[in-house]
Image (tube, rainbow, N blue to C red; front, top):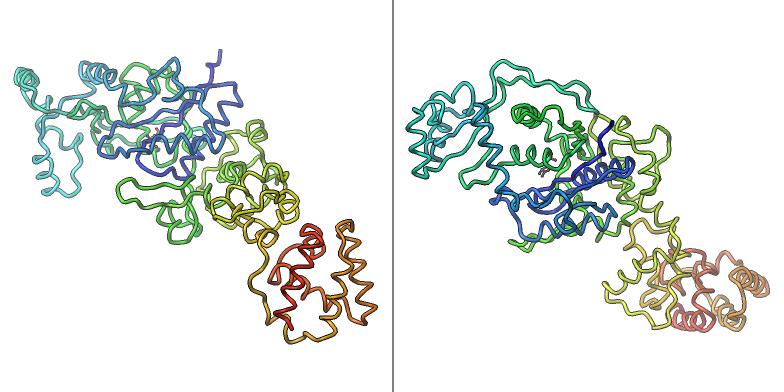
Length: 502
Ligand code: GLU
């Protein structure tokens, strides 16, 4: 019988959450939901030198924003907790002891100074099969002396003893057959002097203890896989080893290398899911959320970075992704990140969203910008009218603020050269036609009929009318704007503008 699917997203709380990390979480989630499985959030905080306060809360909030909700997590708990590795500290030593007893690991007593000296002497120094017998460890020291050192609390680390001349081979579901030569792998530290496990030991111990069935993680972890596989074997759990799924990297727009936060800063787009404030420097790094992305669009565009359903379909809801996702359709090649394309997804989502969905976002953006709306201002029809002009939620401000705040400046250069007394007379007459009962279409008919009476071409009046209402050469249909503004506000704006135009 197939085991019940259990997958985990296992971030280290070291800072902002890169979009590649969110994609890893998403693929884990999709796979779990598709298979009625369990999606676990496990916080890998064993490296206390890299721990950053607030990062765990931040990761949780990013996942929540995206609708990627764990079934088990530090906050929710679960049958296999705790879900923070620092709280599992006591559970790891037994694995290290077991590996030492079976001679697959050893104590190393080399001091940091001794290791530094070695690295100075041999710049490519690797602690491993070629060098381990020249170092201070339980392979080179007499057993009784080892016991004495341990009894005296001499600081030590535990290292894996990587075998010589072996190929560690395994199947990665995306990459197929993968093989690593053990002669190129160093004896990684498993347990540190402070008693904390390293990532390598903790990840295997916890994936085993939490009954993980599939490991979805970024390709940058592929070189660690042989060490993990050796540990699965040496601990005697090889039969229960999860399936490996190393996801393709997300590349810079030009395809040269992995996309980093620095690339985003340089090229002016976000790389993190939400704004991240570095607690030490106070530096704020912009996130997709604050840049004006809808979470549905963000999830959609992430899914398409390295995956497709085999058709041309590009717009997917979370439910559709859960139904269509398949590991087999994840590509091996890195996926180039294109911010213009990212905005295209967001634009599609915005323009197809009902105004009721967009309303809270737009209200929040107005509030954030400190633009006060009249208490009875009705944003919904405005949103409906301008949404297909917005690629980012923040675009709603420029695309709609003129409905609520009358223009302070006019694009006079566009009006003045062709302005004359006849046009002014026309607009004064047009004010009298305005009536809240008229539809936008009827307003347009009246406008055109009146133009004819005044022997003016409607085409020459439309642009000045638009500039009167919004200040510049932008916005949706001018009669739609006038309809939403209402007769009295439209008349006021005509009056204000006429003072400037004449
Ligand atoms: N803690 C690792 C990270 O920060 C997890 C890698 C894995 O999933 O094995 O990405």
